[in-house]
Amino acid sequence: MTDAPRIEVHEGPDDLATAVAGELLTRIADAQAGGRVPQIALTGGTIAVRIHEEVARLSPESGVDWGAVEIWFGDERFVAADSEDRNAGQARAAFLDEVGATRVHEMASTADAADPDAGALAYAAEVREHGAGQFDIMMLGVGPDGHIASLFPGFPQLDVEDAIAVGVTDSPKPPPERISLTFAALRRSTSVWFLVSGDGKADAVAQALGGADLHDIPAAGVQGLEETIWFLDHASASKL
Image: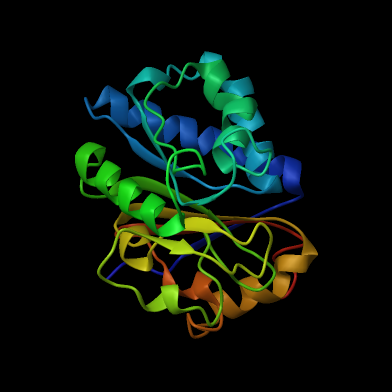
């Protein structure tokens, strides 16, 4: 049983991004100093891009060897490899290429798999081959509807317990085709970090932390094996 989630409230999105980036770099550096190869899962979204840009800015002084970090994604848009919608492309542009990350495990694009389900199976195989049995840090954004990764309220993927990843074909948020880690995979994380900014997310944050059913607010369905942190700004925390 993990402890109650830790809630950090920052002034605004810029302060939030700087705090998360600093914490991430410290955790990775500490793990590497202990002789471990950290397994880190990234998320997409506006606040994630700000965080990634801060990681790039702060990395030179951090002592982190990005060539010795396994990078994963909680979900991906099943679109063309060069689409601006891809979380991996956004992360590469914001920081991965700049810091020299080489162990980047992208989910399939339309060039790699016939459909989202095939892409999900391929990603599950990748996790089994290169993963460590669990993620060190799982970063998750939260939608206004409470969705995390590409697990949406009321969708059948919420109840998949026997797979690492699943395909999504009718996402309520465009683009409609996606690949997502399952709850079963997300929960195999030492530390889960929710990254949330803006008053449009305040209801979802309050419901998730208030114990909502995961079928209504999927963000309520994930906690870390050892630690869960909600990184919020004042706007997203305004209904707590």
